[in-house]
Length: 287
Image 1 (cartoon, rainbow, N blue to C red):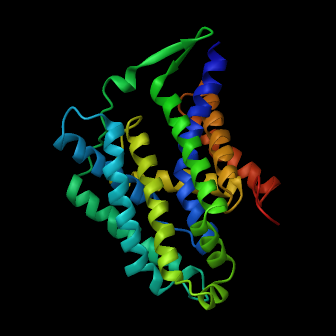
Image 2 (cartoon, rainbow, N blue to C red; image 1 turned 180 degrees about the vertical axis):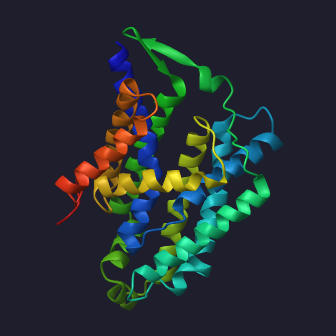
């Protein structure tokens, strides 16, 4: 039973890891840009959630997600419109990536000056302690809820991109920007929408992770590392691949903890490296 619970908890954690990488996969899939600041936006969203939770005590942290997502989406729109759209058409893909690196560095230092270096968490109250029993297995409500949210987000984003008019416009802009312009599409606005969606997803991931573990202004490095591994392992630009990759990393991490309590995450990184060597295009990546 212990091993079954470990694997199940790894799947629940993997759902959260999948959300960490989902926004990054979206931006890369549409704009072919790696947003190095993605992890810092995740941490910033968590800090905003902690601030709102303290300002409105007694409110469920799940309700805090809604305003934080709206704020993050607005930041994403502004980030893309004011900064990224100026360099997005550069022939050298390193230019926009270096811009996001600079933004990451600035954000980290601003958060350090504003919030300090003391680790904080988003208090989830009874939700963090609630559990139920199924067939002799003790499962936490928050981890199960996290996996459910991740499946809804992945399914919703997949539906948006593949089944709606705005999704077709996004795909057309991604495939050929010049032709999209001839059809009356304004790529800058589409990119801003995509970045808004990406950071909204990052906000959800940041808050859910903040309910599970403490974080500091420097935690963005850990977040972007996991997100990057999820995206590459799942296949660049593949949404469902990112979810499966997140689950693989989550299960590997918690099973690794059973063997070595100090090196569980190391096993997840080793899985990423091994998979990168054996299948560099990822689970669903194109050759």
